[in-house]
Image (cartoon, rainbow, N blue to C red; front, side):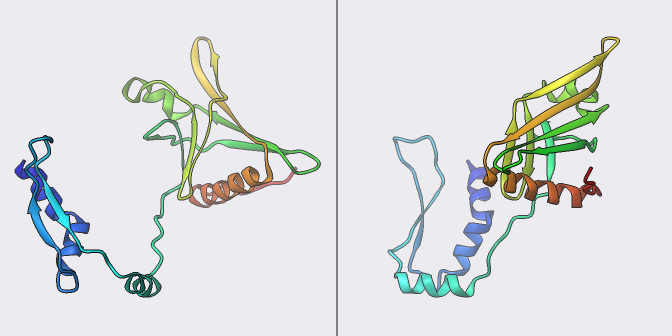
Length: 179
């Protein structure tokens, strides 16, 4: 319990609130409830005035989380092999498909440690794009290649995919070659 309390008091939120105690009339209290097994710190703050919040939001900067774009076959384990990517798009531009080909992917080297392939995940600062259309190619009983397809059914999905690919290409030194 002491560890939980020290973690709660050491969190950035708790530190920020401790520095703000001059402007808020809040109080810290230890929550010892007979209905709960959690005995941690609770915070009681009075209702804040809305104009004060608006003023503070205008002066505070926008916080953007930067996530290195990554491709994963097992969630939590980034694929180290850079793929060959082929794009197709319908004539009217409403849908398209991306075909990723990974020769000798690193997921085969660490599959015993990280687990089985659960899908195809493209992760960046906007979120996760995913597909379950993943096929492995075997030569003489040994895994040789993985081919994953990502289908985009709307222009919005196409634009989102292209934003991911731009970030992934910049992070991995890829360039677009039109054929």
